[in-house]
Image (cartoon, rainbow over all chains, first blue to last red; front, side, top):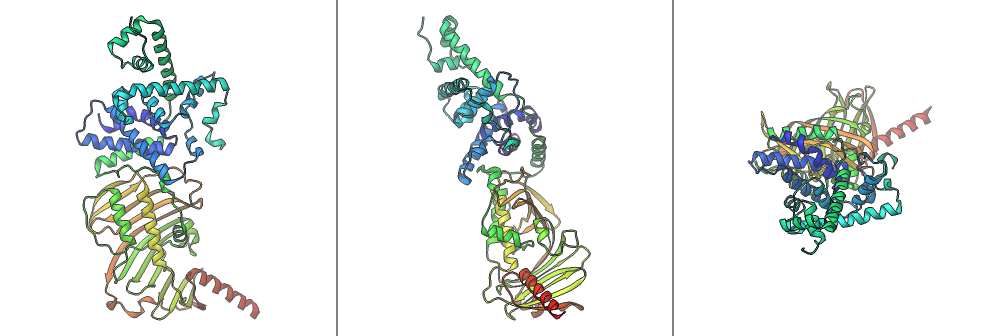
Length: 173
Length: 370
């Protein structure tokens, strides 16, 4: 497949992934573009294509990490900056998914990355590559991340905290 | 029966990554099977949360399409990821603010180095370094086109007869600090304004045309010289290239132009300006000569103090001469027939301010005579 076709097939998933990690639409877009330009070069150089989805998520994760580090170096990162990606509407009449999403947003970046990669259906091997952790650690770290997410989710459920505070409508700010 | 699984093993079973023994245990242990089911349910919730349909911005699809097409056809080479993205465009500081407010014209210095296999970041760095370097002790003659919009256009006194498009002729003597002449013309060739100063004579002349009437302001040079207009222009251009360097999204193309190879660096459009930014660029491209990295073309769009800001610069000719070969009156402006000549006294570092104050003084004198 050519880069353009691969973008059509995986671009949206990479964008979602980047948006969840970076929480900023422009950063997410930059991350997507960088990822697919690297793919173009990878293909042109005759790179491995047997697991292109895993490769894309690894490159996107690296690009996202670079941007997160860049933020820390260049500007004070205000909480308001973390709330700029308007979330997609959820078929969620009882608010269960909204709470789940809020709990996910509140996790540490590595936990969020691991769960996001897992939710994309990546194997432990691919998750290890993308998250830059040892393959044998993936299961343990995933289990802990899921525990922390579950605890945060349960806490929100019990506290009846207004979940929209996690993802305010940008137009209201 | 084997002992029950720990949470890591449960996770592995739920993720389809467990070994045969763990899977066999879960098949026979109701408690562990329930834990696996619970894990799977949690993962499903997260998947539903994350995988809700998100419309990818149309601008992103278009942008990636363009990037892929450009990359496929040219010599795209990304800068090594260094982070920052849009926010590293944010740049503030006195020099930039002053330069941006005042400088609307640009200078292209002589540059020397040669390199043919460089990335966008390296090209920008070489270009910025050359802009920052002290020019050779020669006389430069430049002719370039300049199109201004937004803030830069508004602060120009003439607006280029409403077009915002100028042709600029500039002569700079790098052997004498502060010696230069600069003149702007509208697209039809009518001179709009000029400024010239020569420390050798201690004089500065500024001319401007308003409603067809030429005015000429003559001052002495201030005792303390600050940055000249060309120096401010150089700072502005350097700051712009620095901002382009700060972007992680540069693309480079090699252009085989009639006069030789050139590099084109594009920084694709980013979103709207950051509210807190003093100066925020949203889109830019730079073309440099591949032989010596001098700037051939530079175009920028952005915002300055929340106002739209854009300029484009295109070099037409660039000559370098020995100071000995340049006539002495090069750094003077001939008196135009019909011009109103105003002696503006001692000049300040800002020629336009001198002209403005001198005009007010003349107005006051005229009223007192009535």
